[in-house]
Image 1 (tube, helix red, strand yellow):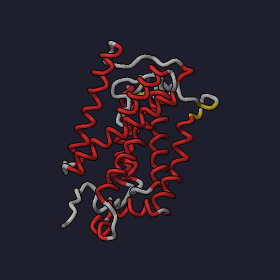
Image 2 (cartoon, one colour):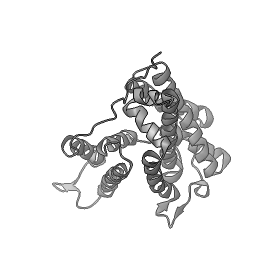
Image 3 (spheres, helix red, strand yellow):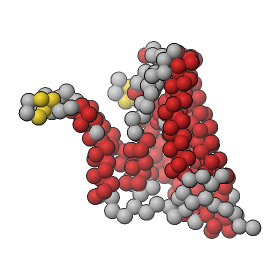
Length: 260
């Protein structure tokens, strides 16, 4: 997400075209995801450690590049409003429409196509998939790269849709919220959408509470930090007490070695 947000902001500012900026973000997201895939699929690195390393890289690398390009490590240049992703009546972004539209597409691909069946099989039982003639390694590469493209699209929206520049760490933990939503929804597309809407609602609620006249304790405004943590606290509460059994795909995080 950070790679997509930064790339979209820089490319849109330099090319003065949000669609090219968005496309560049998708490409960079695919590249970063491919690097991660090589680490965990080819070299069998621990997925959590490799993911954390890439997260740290993406926290620092944009600052270095931005400092070189714009003499500012904290943010990129402000993008003119006419070069941002368009929205309708200043309320509904085209990126939001695409996000909703892609959910039924993902559901159909995963559950109604041979490609989706293979994707699920290499995550659930790669040995059986391999015995059926599925190229497990290649399909895992494809799945990881697709996930990188989608994550980069979300990051791009943050910088050239919701905002007008990239700021350091602007995802503010949304990637972890997305992961929590995935677990909450038990790895199913439609419930993932509902979970994300729930977390989006809690974030919108926290924004509305900031500075509200009723958000006071003993006549003093509630510190903004307490308001900002509402989505994350609710995430913990929901995960701890309301999701029930959430079973991950059996082969999740387990490297696959083809038997000779």
